[in-house]
Length: 372
Image 1 (cartoon, rainbow, N blue to C red):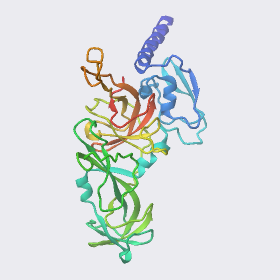
Image 2: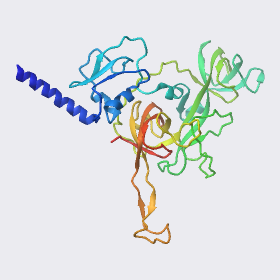
Image 3: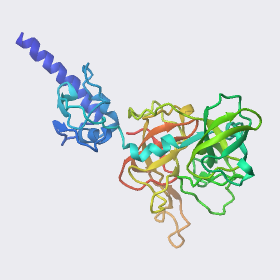
Image 4: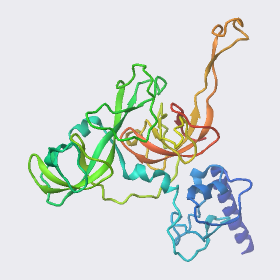
């Protein structure tokens, strides 16, 4: 009996050791940890693992009671031969901790959508507002064309184009690829840093997605062409040319399963940076970036990439002529590791990601690939 027990324990140790090795268990990991308010699943995983996105590999798969995505402040986590599990459940009086800080991504979940320009052009649009005023505020009527027959009281989101994401077939090397929309309506102040260099690239390139921002909600009063809708709320004045889309009443799933990509898309890179308060052109942890890959490229929520800064091409002054820096053979320097980004929302060929950690600033044109 003792031999069987020892064999069982040895088997568990070997199994856990295999998981721990694959997930990169930190040498200084704690054996127990008390969950605190402000923690996230990622930050807790980083206490135990060198690779936080692999935390499911050490979670106790034999648990039948506790859901690892429902961990609460006050819970005691224990790491033993079976893996990581909840050793003591706190009295549940608060919300479970999120995978990542929701405050950093909430606007991108609620207010922004990305769709093809051709699809956007088919959406209903505001042709005029009440009394033919130049702008509409809450409580005024909107007159909308191309609105399919709808029930009185049905709600629609009023959206305005903010940016066009473009590719130039060069892995993002030629230019910034997030450009303001050239539109006949006022532009929403977008979340992306822009490059206003007069380099001939504005408005060119292959459009891979047009971003719109929800700026209001209207409900149907009367069908027709134009239909009459009441503007029930708005974050800015509505004008002719604004578009309407169905209201997304589906609660957003704030739970993400961090995981490496099944197959890292080729030529994937950071194509836009969300604005910082200081207007900087670089990003760091807990900042949002836009990637040039999406659901059609095999990317889903939770996909975690490593970010690399492409190496410069420099002249070899030793084997070349030293009197002119542009002489001599060119040498491509290795890419430098920057940090990790986790995708939290995907569209067809665009995705939003949150920078989770980093050792240097993230820049436009940094490449993303499967984490090592």
